[in-house]
Image 1: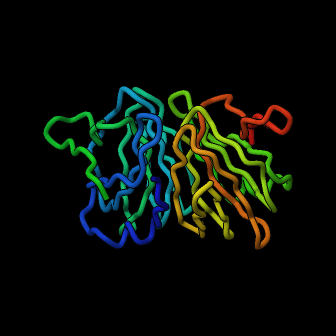
Image 2 (image 1 turned 90 degrees about the vertical axis):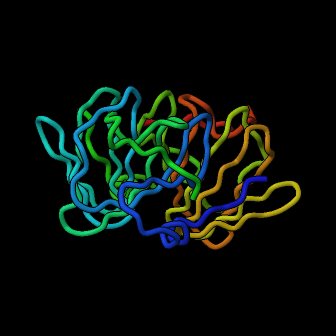
Image 3 (image 1 turned 120 degrees about the horizontal axis):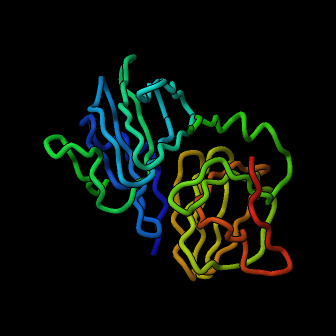
Length: 117
Length: 117
């Protein structure tokens, strides 16, 4: 039986950065939340990735531009597109959509698989 | 080239109820926003559907229970599960995830296909 999930409550239950938590599963995909701070690695995925900024300010750097996300901003990162998330102004809370089991980066040395919230 | 989308701006651009707008496309699925007021039809889908309550209070009635969603509450409605969204306390803003092209209800007489925001 599906149960509702409160995002603020789930965000309050962990403190680690760059360590996504699964809050729902949808059609073979995972809805994840994560806390970000500082710069992540440059990477790309073989799948689309969706970012929704829930709190804070997040730069998503691409090789040719930067998109700055604030609360309520949604950004689709297309499969194959190199990007680097950077939280320059303190902690950022994001909601993400990725295929089930997909790591958060293509780099084997830094990849983290999402765990249950 | 993907561009960020601001949800508040997109919500501000239409007034119709039960008429979903597509704000992003992800892996064969559509991220939609909708404004809801009053009761919708009982229906089910052949796919999972995800609700995120962005503003207001929304009851999702199931045959055996009701889940009440407030801002920041996320609910996965599993494929085949009969449900009826009811906004009893005024307008509600939701973000939805559905397969591309899927109508918002299984009832042919009331089905609405999402259009671009």
